[in-house]
Length: 465
Image (cartoon, rainbow, N blue to C red):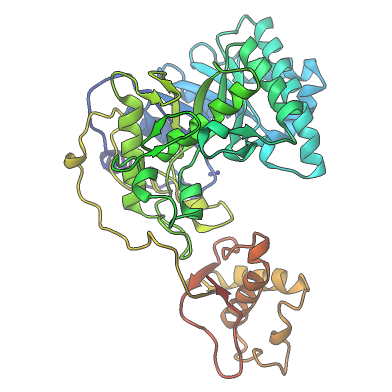
């Protein structure tokens, strides 16, 4: 899911603020995996100016917690995944974590949630599975530490992704995965119910829609309100994809005997751009999704979901900034309301009072249908040649014949240039490993192209979509 030189006054004037002075239910995820991000002091001022009511951190950064003192922003902090097992097996370690990261700041900084890990149940190596078993014990340790400090007002939870479900459509058949249902999820729900805490979910309609853009209506994913589906199992009528996703979790919890645990949307949003083959990642869709989301969450009276009408769902938009140092597909780096330099990607009113006609128009981007054709992965223009050369060495040293055609005397050896060799190596690697999760990124040194870079007898491998 991070130096700075922009003038404060100029940058502050760029932030799009509108609406009445009201307490917002909308929160913002503040990640820092980016270069040249505004300093935390300015980032907090931006969050306040945007009328957000909550902020979620991916750690317990002491500088940021101090800056949040006296702001009236409700704060969520996080224990990293790699500390879970230690805390689960050592109450003293848990006590120390609370003494170091909560007690010095509360109540001046309004810490409301401690999140134990992030999407722990989405990782499945042998080591990760060990952390699964430590997750709920760690949550209980943290709760005991809070009770020892009379801080039960702070709730303990853990964010999960939608992949905790084995079945999710229609919502009424929502069921947790069999490998975690009884061993992890049921004890977690027992804990959340005992402590009156919340089930935190990272819910992104973009992902199911982009995986099936010809089968799921885009307007249904964007809350545009001109499409509906009926769940034949429950009889409930759905007008948007997010409600279906949330209710599938509610039905899954009900099947385990916990029908009343409240939800928090710990992450949601829509990417502003992505790779060529990633449909629908554009400014217009991102603005439409987040604006409509805010309208829905902020509506009076509260809308809730079909399975829980009228119930408030605290919601955190992902994210404050684009995080340009994230690896993976292009969308990973482009979820921000603001770009990585702090300028706005699009106007948004987090109070929900601004009507859609008050926003300036955003140009339509024609990438709402899947790309069909060939793509190549080549060295990006203007990148550092030393870094490029090092990347070629890394790729070619990996073996698997990736760079066989670049050896002296072979078809792609000439011209002997770093850019040429990098382009071939990147294309060859991507074509070989994309099916296993490989991406055309290489720490920002590569980019996708629809133009075949092949020349003469040298044929570049491609990926066909």
